Amino acid sequence: MTATPIARFRALLPGMPLPERAGRDALGTMPVRAARHCDAVAAASGYGWWLRPPIDFDLLFDGHRLWWSCAEAFAGWLPLEAAQFPGFAACFDAAAPEAARGYSAPFLTALPEGGMVQVWTGLLARTAPGWSLLLRSPVNLAGPAGAVAFEGIVEADLWGGPLFANFRLTRTDEPVPFRRALPFLQAVPVPQFAYGDAVLSATDAASGLDSLGEDDWAGWMRDVVEPSRSSDHRPGRYAAEVRRRRRSGGCPFHLGAGDAARA
Image (cartoon, rainbow, N blue to C red; front, side, top):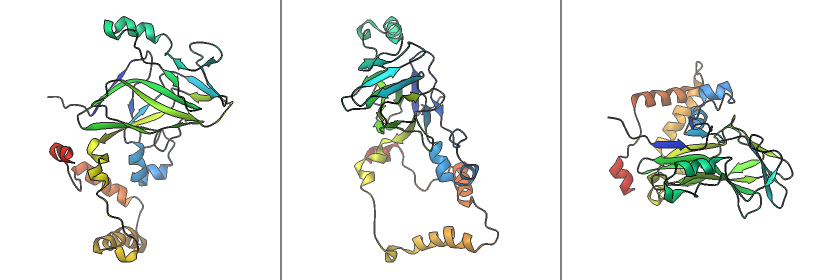
């Protein structure tokens, strides 16, 4: 029996890269010491899947309107309003049911706000029930220079349309390159109960040292004082403990499907 995948991606644009598991070393750009000893940074870097641009292209904002260029498809620059991926509309109509013909998704769309563009990742994505996809900039890895991705949570167990992302260009009169060689987005799986009101309202915040309890001081002793006192202390104890807990399947709490639905 095959388990249902948390996320299912379908790449629709010809020649585009498939999503890939994000790497804990951020494509080798992370300092070795951080990758080896800082599990917090490495775990965040490897959380989700990298999405790469479907094709190499450039955007330019002149302060008034957007332009785009794609050397693989045409020479020079074209004004951008809504643009189809080169050659895709005909391919879509040849494969789509009759009622869907003529409704291929645009690849690039200039948004009303100056310097903002919507980019189709080229993907359809579906998630298991109760799971969403957080689309964000690559974690601890520089995205396209001159562009900032807006983060968004897509409930892809419900949404069946194209997986889009919005970018804001942060410089004018200078091309902003998007290249398949580098991820431009990271798709992170998120259980829907995790961003519900019941969870986000369940917080406890207090001020002052007198707000610390016995458990707080015990943790401080374990993680700060004792390593500082030990003559043979080596960095990476936390990372080693986290890896041991993952291997053993241990978790400080567990929410089953019923708990998630109630949350």
